[in-house]
Image (tube, rainbow over all chains, first blue to last red; front, side, top):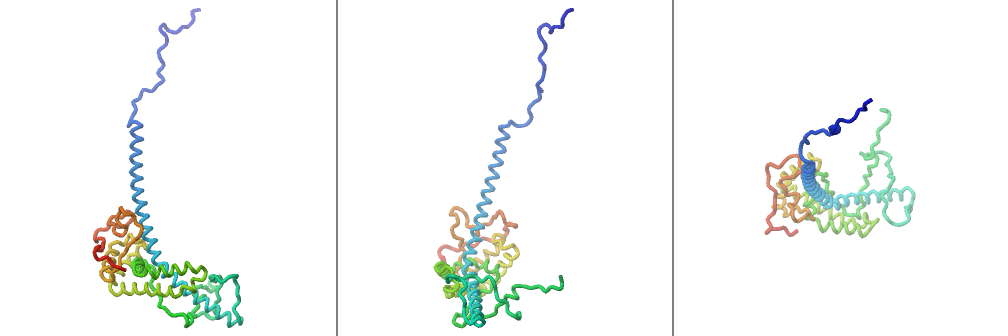
Length: 119
Length: 172
């Protein structure tokens, strides 16, 4: 029995590639465009950050000018409360106890509440 | 819930004992945050020496500055008071419009430039105090003189930045 043989001259090439045209820009162009957009974004971001830095500097200096005023007022109030506290202690206990080792001023954790609330 | 009486610290902790007579009295500044912020650069311009003295005293007396620096503190307060009083006397309208604007804009200085320029002009002409933000980069417009600002809610349509003339730079 005659055997099946390839056709004379061989089989035709099997077309396994899709032969579609490549759409759009070349990858290098796309990459370049993305880079340009990114650079523009960074440029605007830099401008924004620099402006924010200046706002922050302005705010910081306004606060620096105010700190002595605010701190002086607070200190006077603390001194007033401390002296009143010491006088009250002296009146109640007869003497002032030294509660801390050292003579640094320590902001009081507890406050004496007067018996009847004024105001 | 309603049976429990609410306790507010600011009432209970109210200690009205005044300072003893051995410590001189001084009238407090008594301005709230927006007027203080609005006047801060003028306070800084006039009271720089007093402020520096006070901060140096506090720095040299750690832990005791509250008592040692009362004198310097009184000077600081008196000086700041004098600035605010002077602004109130000569530039009340501009001052009010600026700090009202700050109040309305979350205390963001850059939202209130037109009002600020008017105030700066008035204060410079009457009190010879100038707003200067130190340490800014040399190659750009100082931040408080810019007409275009990225982060402002509104663009500045009217108003010119106030730049004091260089030949009459104030001495203090």
